[in-house]
Image (cartoon, rainbow, N blue to C red; front, side, top):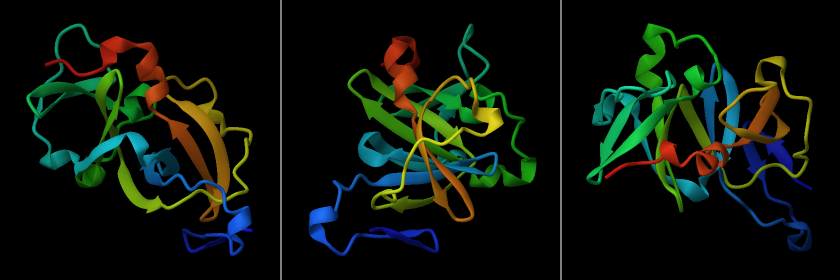
Length: 173
């Protein structure tokens, strides 16, 4: 049985009960922790260190610009704006991070408030919970499950699911 100690997951002692470990990156948006599988994570960087350009004309408000990387222009999507949350406080902007994710359709970058850690695997008690009210009907992510974590809920999310259904959200060369 897994146990949770100070934001760290201890693996089960019996290897027969050990599930396939899938590491997850823990990040925050509006003080809520989320976790996404690291399998598609290509790069993680501070937003202020990223080489970017302004958004092109006729893009949704939640596309806040383009990441210039490896000879490509990669859309930058603000999860705060996509999820209808207020802008981040000016004094917290230095902690913002970009998650550059890649799948077979291409790459897309997401702005998050901060990154906390990588969990080698999620606790086994991961299960579907009633999502907090602000997340009901939220576009731009597939919420998978939630687990008790650090005095609250850690919500696992697949950020690429909506990207796969909207090819216009991936990089251009």
